[in-house]
Amino acid sequence: MPEVWAVDVPAEIARMAEHVARLTADETRRAARFHHDADRHHFVIGRSTRRTLLARRLDVDPATLVFVEGRHGKPQLGSHAGSAPRFNSSHSGRWVLHALAEVEVGVDVEEIRPDFARLDDFLWVLAPEERAVVQAATPALRAAALATVWVRKEAYVKALGEGLSRSLPDIAIVADEHGPALAYDHNPGKNETIWRFMDLEIDRAYKSCLAHAGPPLEVSVRTWPP
Image 1: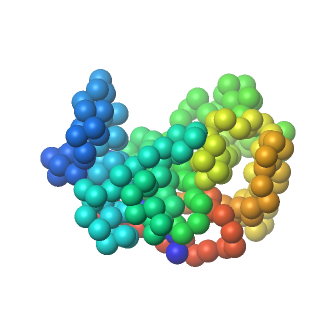
Image 2: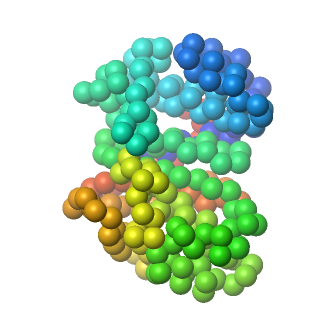
């Protein structure tokens, strides 16, 4: 069963020393290079909670987990690789999300920012069908509509492990009465995997989505701590 864990970053700042203690020496050095507290908090708490959740799922010591990056930068486990779940993380505003599953998975969360209502700034990422959805929204709802379109697409390309290396206007994810679905992906090398999408309700001021490969699965959405 895929799990999505929502971590409220401001709520975890009081336990920052515990989170720092879970990091490797390299992660601690990377955390120290952030100039802004908010960025450092996202990094430290995101890495600490991801390590804890994966270790809990594998029933191992969190310190034994070794992470490597795929060709396009998607993190994966270099240790315990044979039994490791797939995972993906995202952060925005006050939230860090972690998705864990036995199939390929991607997750994205975005705060609904006022600039999302300026559609011209985002035309380069939208397929014609997605553009029509956002343009049809009333001005008051346009930012939320754009954020919804964006998190679905971002979750999909993160699940693929190819990120922004793909041409985003060549991907269309549209919704009907059955929910969001991949309408097409015209990028070269697209495989025949079936992808499922689940819009997540984390916070009214945010939009988030989980994408996973294969047949429909029940998804468990949980709040940190375990």
